[in-house]
Length: 91
Image (cartoon, rainbow, N blue to C red):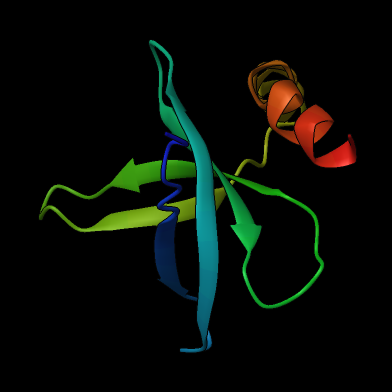
């Protein structure tokens, strides 16, 4: 029996109050932070990598990874982890 696919759908409200819908492809946690790889649901945009930040009041925010070195390291990890997903789509 084939495994049923149930995507994790994430709704994100940007700084302008606009809602965007994404599929969460993967998440990783390092010693320093947590990160998510999101794919927009309603357009053909590329995967977005964001840093998960939590405020002391418990609110969670998804923020751009502004440090270039940090971004490159996280991108490499996600590329390796998601490689099989995208190779299957090409076949």
